Amino acid sequence: YVGYVFLDKHFFLLFLLQNAVMLDEYHYDVFFLNHDLFLCISQNSTAQESYVGQVLKIHVDQGFNVHMLVRATRKTQRGKAAPFVYCGDVTFVNWKGSKPITIQWQLKESVPDYLQGVFGIL
Image 1 (cartoon, one colour):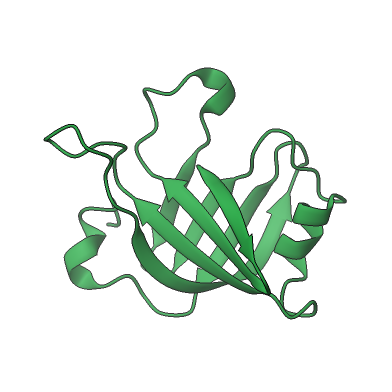
Image 2 (cartoon, one colour):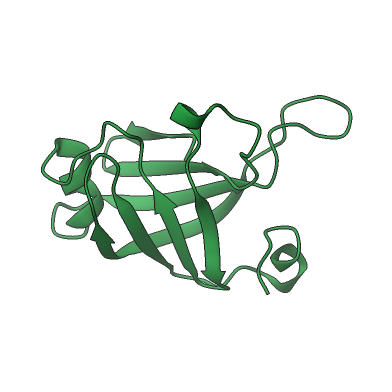
């Protein structure tokens, strides 16, 4: 989980899939469970009852659209920042824990076949 951005009623979630080189306090497990289901762990400071936690859970009721962007690695082979890939809208499925929260997201559209290998989807 790299971070998030609010823009009006849009909430953009930014994820890095290969984050093993990051320090433990910044290491968040994120991965695809299958072609249209994603699991992430929030930032350590995010509680279920916080504003961000509540937007994540009841975003539909609050009129927020949640969008997911993913990159497979931090850097390209040339050492530049790797681009994020827009994976579309997601919907909250369930969660557990707090500070951090483990959250499952349902993608509105399946990850295209050509990206499934890049994103480690079996």
